[in-house]
Length: 441
Image (cartoon, rainbow, N blue to C red; front, side):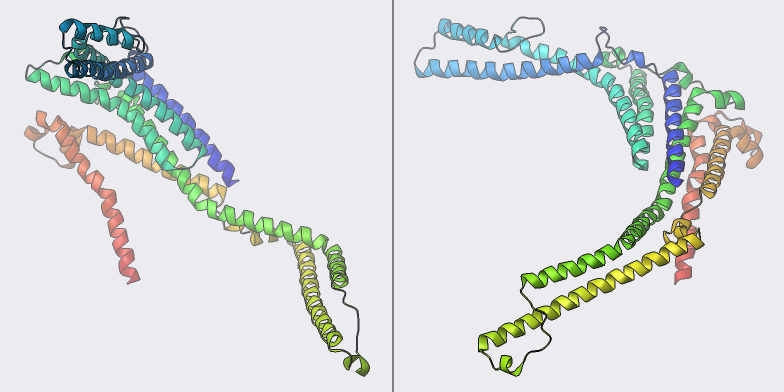
């Protein structure tokens, strides 16, 4: 039952991930990062520019080695005529052109290679910016599938981190561009980069509570928190129930083996006796009870043979006795277990430790209560902190001059208001840890 409960939670979390993607694509125009400015697919352009860069680098190295070899040979053989050097240079250039394929179809001169490499690196840098979003979305989907198959909160953190990083990268790049604009510095590379974020990301209605929670950015933040909350709840449930489930399965398997063996124990006893008899026959041990005086005073070899037979016989009898005793105890235990299970229907759950596992009903109630409390507390506190005017006016009761100040609406003030909230839970955990440690002492 617990396994189905965890599976249901994972399915719910997968649906929340789909909800996150739906909200994300409403504020992130992914079609702008799929193709380059020339209309070519980013993946195709990325690998093409990478291939061209390596082509130019390898061609430059081979071309340089060829020219250097021509110059060294010319000086060694005293044939440093310009016509000869030019002829050999054209020869190697034509030979190398057969090995490489260039973008424009013609083999460049040695002096043209730096400019061509610069162009390819510019294209490559633009493609890196665009392909980063595709890599991140692929990572988020792969780790979401991995999180569904394997219970590990690290996978869910990577999922949310990848999605958030796709929003952070454009903000950082274009924030840096805006900072350069303040100093009248313009970089053409930054000017040509696309801005995939929607304008609603920068316009959050904070005056109306309903519009505030209906905005895509706030919905994305809440959905991401719910996704992580469910992931940690799944991990907690799995950690709590898995040891008892493993112990239950192990004991259940042992009881099944005991019951199956006890049914065939009579046949096993007969089999043990037959094997002991065959062993005695193989060792040629006769069932002799006594030995006469004449036999004892017989030849020395016969006396030692007789003693050896008696020792082997004694060993076989002891082994046979132990096996029969174990089989008898197994049969009695199996009959006792069978009678116990018929008289007490809860005996199997007690013996297999199934009753020690948390009840599914209590897990459901605990999950719902914790989920509603944490999400509700997050939403309420977030709304209060994003409205510093109400907080400063009714909580701290500051003068109107301070409350109406533009500075109070700056991000720095909001961060200052967040500091007590951030420090609340670590301080509480430290206090609890200190009290527990003190009680142990």
